[in-house]
Image (cartoon, rainbow, N blue to C red; front, side, top):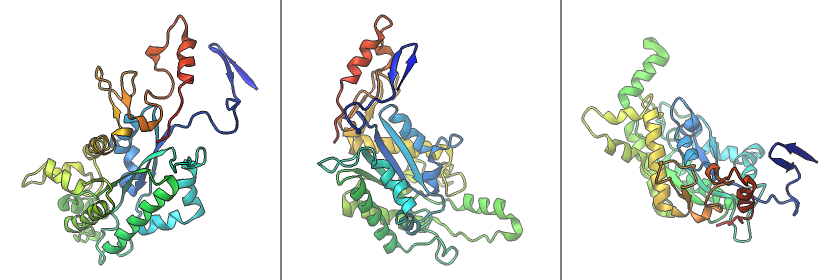
Length: 315
């Protein structure tokens, strides 16, 4: 079958050389709890959207954040048929792993701890003891390597700090003065312990870590705790906090994994342009399809012929 266009004939059966598609766009997968689930929120300037912007026309970014989940529950989800397909199989079913154990998934972020760090007395339902939390992280990281290839790039992210005044204000607004307990089921000390636990796993397994607990407080020091502006309710990220995470994560990717980093256009500062560039491990350094300013009105087809001849590389 074929369909006629004003620009020529489009063949719907484009895989003439066999069942395998001629090109598979690289992927980035974001794993975590509600802070990840909300990372594409337009009203919050979600940090995941910052990553998607960086990888325009080069990588698809998949959000697998699960609101309210701790690492215990996420592992239970991975052990279900639905969870395995959702997080792993659906990401690799087109290309699988090549002979070197490499898939089209180039990067996975693992962002847990905000729920695991709940106070065991006030919120035993979501609390996960630190040693089990660390073992759960090891299992999640191992599962990523088993399913996405041993060379998949990984980044751990610590839980952010908890701001007490903002958290108590949120409690009062949500439950009212009669039901608000005034007790903190999540607090700065517990979040510190779980952030340290994430950093310890980072050191143990030699995996880059974005230490939000430390970076947020250091970037806005002061007696009045101005870093609370990064949080919408003392726990979850505000628009400013999402922008902070997005920017710091892009910096970390560029530093630790330059082979998959994107360099914005020196002329415009934008990621998705002809003069932007990407690391060789993304396979298609210049991006998918010819850029609009590479297409001549005299012979538009020439740009597509040149682009179509480029071979994908997998690293």
